[in-house]
Length: 204
Image (cartoon, rainbow, N blue to C red; front, side, top):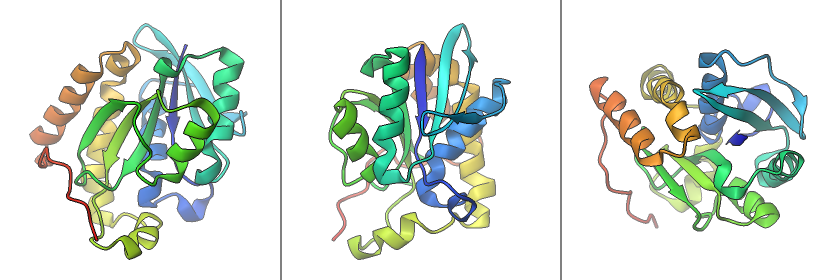
């Protein structure tokens, strides 16, 4: 069993926030792969199905971002899922908008959802880092991540990226992280949403 977690804040007022792009990606995976309706479970909502030939639990924590680890820890404990079988989809300030990188372990870079998961489970889980760009000033970060994507972003690179993630989710479920990342990049490039490979420089 694999565990795919989308990070975000619950409630309609947060649904379009940049901070909720993890929710958006995992929700699209559920739709694309014909999974059952989301139901309340593990302090959030969850659904189960197959990604290719791999059984997977998809989870959207119902806690707020800074308590995400409670929901993830409960689901992982229930199914006895190893850290290497957990993939967390989250927004990443240090990548350009539309850029996706897969990594295992590492720090939380100030991300409260990752910090909470690390506190409950440790840091050696897999992360699907979805770039949202940086506002340019660290004092603006809080307002920026809790603001909605512009309509042009949402109907442009956000939907395109979520489609590419859903199309290739079986690769990620099989542990073929590099292939998954490459397929997503190729899909984005084909739709005209290619972006630089470099991480954005640290902001003051």
